[in-house]
Length: 308
Image (cartoon, rainbow, N blue to C red; front, top):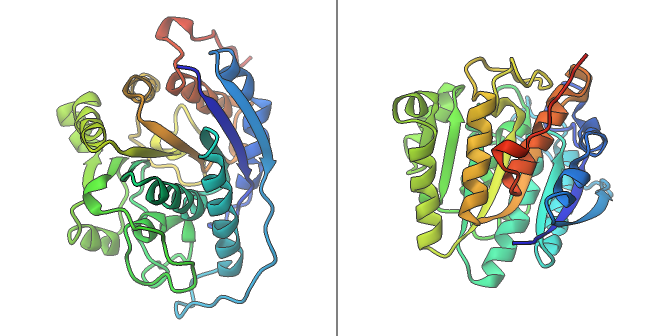
């Protein structure tokens, strides 16, 4: 099925403290994301990068929180951009750190609510990102989007999340690094937690197919948020939050192939790529290859890569 993919650059660094993620959108373009999608017969519209709007005052009672006005501003502009793009096709939001999901998923939720459809979230990440601005010790707001999406308290500085996603519609997949405060909060919510032990015991396929079956049965929309650190750092070094034991090359492609076969994905985040930490564009190319698998590239169509 031919689709229209809307590329939206989100050059965001405010959600964490390690500079470089703002170069992510340019790296994806340089790695050939548009060509990879069009070669599969789809249409690509590149909307360029969103710009930070005029900032308004925003404060937090937690003194560790930093860059709050900027993060709120990015969330607002990305909500608008994502919601508008869903009218025309599948938005692919190229980040940028994971705080961009505060806006992209809000836009998808607003669109789904207007369309009268339930929105589901697949979070492909080493981290659960279930902190709030009140509980984070690092002050890095890229660790808070799932809490905002699920309707947890503590986000008074942000616009109210449109139609918070019920816990049973959220799947954390591949996680392997959770802070104690996040773990305690997750135990109070019925979120599907498929950490790496679950995937090791049951395999990559079974938990994902079960979640996709739930989305299909509900006639839902599916937002996928893909963090570079979902992948093992041995194959994807260009991320500032490396956690050993991530998915392998083959496992990650299998996830994307299953998502393509499901036909359920309606929006996609690509987050936490830091080109400053990459090796000759290795991670950017891998992420683009994963997008191609999501859009229908077959296993025998993969290009040979040389990093020499």
